[in-house]
Image (cartoon, rainbow, N blue to C red; front, side, top):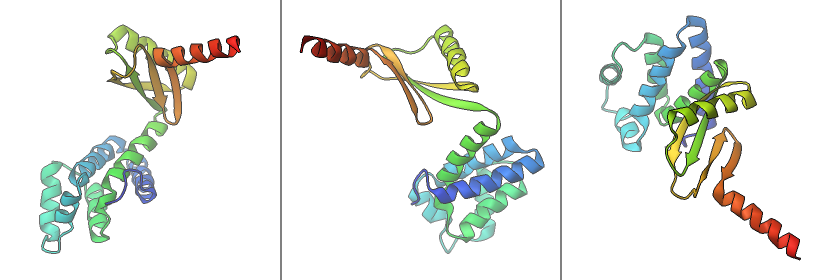
Length: 181
C-alpha cells in the first residue's frame, strides 16, 4: 500500500486540479477525491477493488454507489488508477489535492493542541492572529491534548508555534540553570 504522502499521488492531484480549474469544478473534484480516499483507505479495500474478477462495470457501480452523481472525469481518474494498479494512491491523491486546493484558495490549515477545548471566542481570536501572521485565511483543527499542561501549540504546515506551559517551564528552568552557573 502506498504511503499517505506518496509523491506519485501529488502528480495525479496536480492533474486533477488542472482539470478542475479548467472545468470550474474544484469542489466536485474535492468530493471525488474524498470518495477515492474512503474507497482506498484500507489495503483490503484496494485489493478487492483491483481484484481480477471485478469487472469495470462492477467497479463503476461501486464508485457510483459511494458517490452519487460523480462526474465522468472523476470516475475516469478512478478507472485509470484501477487499470494501472495504482488505487493505493487514493489517500495520497486526496491529501495532496486538499493541500493544492488550499493553496489555490489562500487557506492555511492549523492544528491547535491545547489542554482544554477552545471556546468560540478564543478560536476566532486565534484564527485572526494566525491570518495576520500568515497572510492567509486560517482554518483551525482543534485537538485536546492532556499532555499539554496549559497554553497551546499551533502547527501550520512545517511551522510549529509552541506556547505551551510545559515549554515555558523548560525554558525558565534552562535560564535559571544558566544564571546559577
